[in-house]
Amino acid sequence: MRAVRWLVFLVVAVGGVAFAAVLGYAVVSALKPPGEVLAVPLSWWPSQWDWHNFARPFLETPFARYYANSVFVGVAVTLLNVVTCTLAGYSFSKFSYPGRNLAFVIVLATLMVPLEVIYVPLYSLIYDLGWVNSFAGLIVPAGTSAFGIFLMRQSIDAVPDELLEAARLDGAGALVSLGRIVVPLVKGPMAALALFIFMMNWDSHLWPLLVASDDEHRTLPVGLAAMQANNLGAAGVPMMMAAAVLAMAPTVALFISLQRRFVEGVAMSAGLR
Image (cartoon, helix red, strand yellow):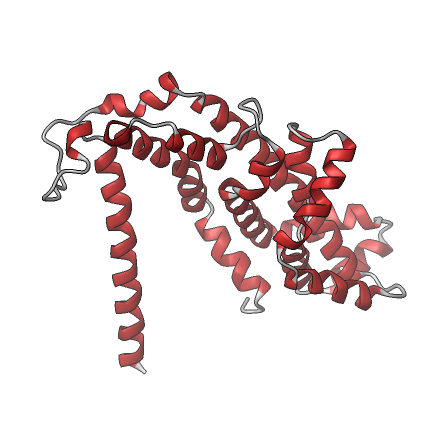
């Protein structure tokens, strides 16, 4: 058993070092002069630290607009998912009504449908609503998720029914019980859901590419692709590396800040707590 643990630890450590090396090389490359990024043989350390590369995306491209759009859309989608998935999970977990189990099975079945399959009818609907090149088209279709509903339902199942029954006897309604009893007990899963959704939305490329074609509504993944298509060969690589590092920073910071809640939420959802 101890040998297995050491083997698992070794594999995880090697994987962590590999990912850290890639991240470290991206940061160092963002600080190199243009002529050294693609130089052969490969050099880890730049001969001169060029911090101006981190300012170039903001000065030479609409990077600030892309960044602001991603932050706005990511926060809005995350808040919508936390609210809708918590309400749906609460309903599936603590209420009994005809068709509840069937509805939950249908929700789970949608997890097996690739998103690319529904993009054509979804785009047609967004077009008919006049939401192309708008924040509504980026936010509303991603406002809930079957995975989030499943995660919150499993987490709320762990909340004792006796607590809700006592609150009901004291005259508390369903929403009051949700806000005062259930939510404080499932903050970990809610944080895990928020992290999952924010990261998925922050990295989403295909749907924003379809529904937002102008700079006013482009998010970072689409904006970075446009910047890459318009860069100046080797001279643009340090700038693109700097832009990629800046784009990655919010998800890394969010994961570090919510790491403990994330682990608690996953453990609670899996029934380990």
